[in-house]
Length: 248
Ligand SMILES: NC(=O)c1ccc[n+]([C@@H]2O[C@H](COP(=O)([O-])OP(=O)(O)OC[C@H]3O[C@@H](n4cnc5c(N)ncnc54)[C@H](O)[C@@H]3O)[C@@H](O)[C@H]2O)c1
Image 1 (cartoon, protein in one colour):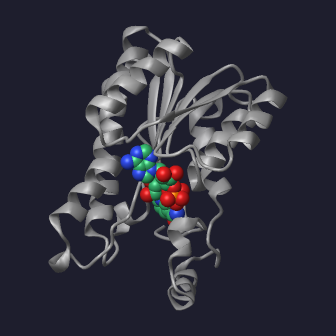
Image 2 (cartoon, protein in one colour):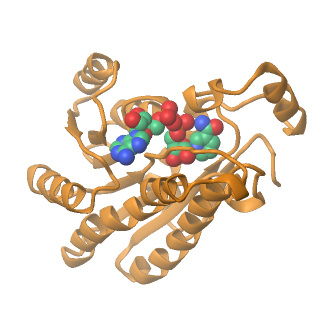
């Protein structure tokens, strides 16, 4: 019950890492609002976790890259919740390809969904925490490739490196109000995103990981929970690598 009574807003909460985060917050006593393009298949499971732990769960359909829509959705959620304590910018996509052949659309889509969305949401949610003198925690889901790079992912790694810079700058802006802004940088985690890899690609990846396995979405959710609760009360502007040692 590390976040009992807290109110969390999670983007991309319908599946994958976001799904485990929604469940992790609910199992630890929070109420969760999640924004995604679709509700996903886990809503009944979320409701059961909410019921068992004294919280509630709400879904809002929305595209995090749509400035007007996402701003309105965030304002609506703040109104309904009476303020947000935890913001998790998790929604993200890949559009991989070698840089010389990459379309401007694939570049721009990845930057707007993975990076600009965190700016849109923080502008509303963190401003509200700041003005109401409400302590809070922001967790941005970056990636180890934003730190070490990855061929075929100039757009994705730029978006995640950008998110790390965003995290540190925002952390400096709001630290004096006890609003902490951190990032997690997952390595290779077993989700639909990595299920697209061939067996050979997967074996080559695993060979580079000191812990010799892909991570589980839950491994990332645990780090996000830690950064959202009192256990990390004096940690801000930090990037926690959840990589099994990759990129250390
Ligand atoms: N899977 C990995 O190995 C890995 C590694 C490092 C970082 N990450 C990051 O973790 C986060 C979650 O990834 P995942 O593996 O769970 O991916 P996923 O594709 O399984 O889930 C992403 C979720 O975000 C939602 N989403 C996508 N675009 C959206 C938009 N425009 N508006 C609202 N919601 C949108 C999707 O509908 C989906 O529910 C992403 O930011 C990703 O970059 C993943």
